[in-house]
Amino acid sequence: MKLLLIMNPGSRSGKGQRLWHTWESGLRDAGIAFERVQTERAGHAFALAREANGCDTVVAAGGDGTINEVLDGVMQSGNPALRMGVLYSGTSPDFCRFHGIPVDPRAALATLVAGRVRQVDVARIVYAAGTRGTCTAYFGCGCNIGMGAAVARVSNRIRRFTGDTLGTGLAVLRAALSNRAADLELEIDGVRECLPHTNNLSVLKSPYIASGLKLNLALEPDDGTLALIAVAGKGRLGLCKTLPGFYSGRAASAPGVLVQHCARVAVRAAAPQEIEFDGDPRGFLPVEIEVQPKALNLIGKCHE
Image (cartoon, rainbow, N blue to C red):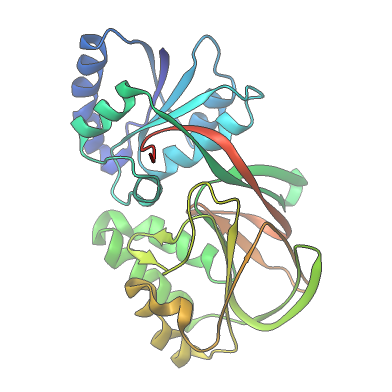
């Protein structure tokens, strides 16, 4: 096994670098060959993973942002045998929690060294990216249409001062108070539907949305399905009342919340609508999202 370690020096506001020596020493002790590359800018981890050569495993050593970029890069590398590992040094381990990857540094290293691979699902998304035209990407957690981009933009700016849970909660509250519902046109597994007055539409491959936000959903890493969650027809007060349910998980069963499982969904709207996936604003509608069953070779927890 030869690893490419893609290490983000900015993870956990720079504190994640303290773990690098532990991980590198552990890999040397285990006799595993590796190359370390440090990211320098947004999008760098994606480019490094996409162009990975001479290794069989690309490891995201950072937080969820690094994980998301590495996952996308591995999927776009053109190498179906390329594996992905995670050494987590962030503050909101949604991807790791869903896939059973330890966040304890030594346990994460032991999992990586063991090298047990599980083939898990990812989602492919095609979206409008302004002057860049139409873009294709892959994500492992979820996409939001409506409030999601505003929440991501604010929370990414304030979480370093407030912490993840509080920062995300404040961002959601702010987005709820300024939300404007949109009329969406959907095609779900080939069936067309209209969803009027939609506050937010989530297309999820994981029940963990962001920084403590979650939903009680029947989703597994390799079940070949996505969950479609729509909050519709709510005013500001109704949205604020719904918010606690996204921390307890009960929002999926709340009145005015639609839950449907699918393999593919396309979304359009007459008015411009911004989208977010895996924690960052990315572009605009229209989007097409389709699950890619067992498309990612992920080192982590393997079920018997």
